[in-house]
Length: 187
Image (cartoon, helix red, strand yellow):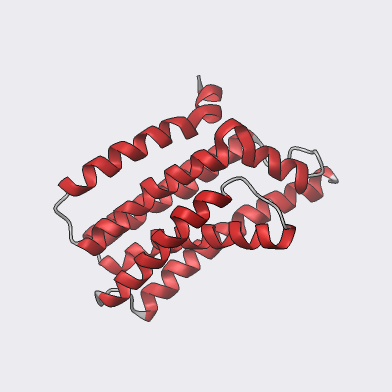
């Protein structure tokens, strides 16, 4: 059962994103907090394009791993559930209970991922799994999120640094994991 969950998590996330989106108007939260909450279902929608039919993992293993399994299925599961969903949940909880500025963690997570997809496509001059939703969903949600947090007075320099730093650290950790596996496997 765990193997099936690790292989098919993206489909549950895709469906759950619509439930979350439908519930957001009922939350009674401020517009900035609603925008923080919006980052998770937006990311889940993006994950379908990225991970349907194991596209992203196969893309990484072919193009970075030279055909070797530098990004195994369990890692994709942990990265996306722990590194994306949990990352956003922590951001939402901190924004709702400690200070709204912590919402920039999730917002920058979305924005940095969108930028990584676009830069990777520009460098390689080709499509990568997740590129379309990165452009259509992630970049606009992230840019509007940062703008609204700053406009509402919750986007101070410390929160900008925390949000951007956490998002960059997460992406560096993922890239480091893949490159370490590439070296280990001699790819």
